[in-house]
Length: 350
Image (cartoon, rainbow, N blue to C red; front, side, top):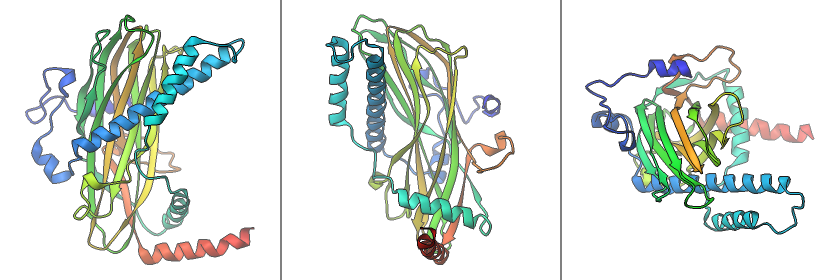
């Protein structure tokens, strides 16, 4: 992934750096946006950003409660700090809402079986991704905090961020939270026939920390996607299947490892029901969620990059794999034939 940074372009006449990190980094020509992507509405990004932030806060509190209980000599004894954490967690649970519909695990299992069979018959195609754009940036805005988590670059299918975040400890023991998100979407070619469109890709993430002298904190990044089978009849603001499909980075501060480079990834696969002549689309929201208490966190740079994913391949990842995802169409007659065959085999396995 470090080689990936070397490929990203410097500022040119078309991509001008903004005056400050907090203001959004590189701008993207409107012509590219209109021709290659759908605009994800700000209200949709806000709703999904708020949901991801609550989930990150809930996970952080749950981890802290579990760790504290393990350290106590008598977990049943009264402890004011533990009681306060449990109250915060209970409050978050009352407001936590899923980002979209429930995961259809039976469809996921069928998709995995179908893709494994169809690999012998149907080739994968490559879809180049458009440039990412700004989503939501939210800082604590409290007197005891300073600094920004800013955009360092917007690229085709990828982003870079950096920041220097401080919480001086005068506001109490509670962690303060920064969240920054970016958005993108891609429209697939029109389906040749009714069936399902299968897609697959990976998201690589990295966060390089220069210093983290903090009392407590966390660093997280996440991937949320949504899809539609027909961009003409299903506007983005009406998509109901948004899902957070991965947290490539999930680390607690201060780091206890020798290296301050955090790395992770998320593999994303799925399918979209399509009709002949209709164009499906996929939307991406990538986010970084950082919390700091009692100290300073300096992030040299963080990145999130989308690339092709080839299961079982031993070939090394190169820069040519980035900025794109893979997809293919499976005709309805084939999907039904495989489903019928798999259904017939289930009693024989018992």
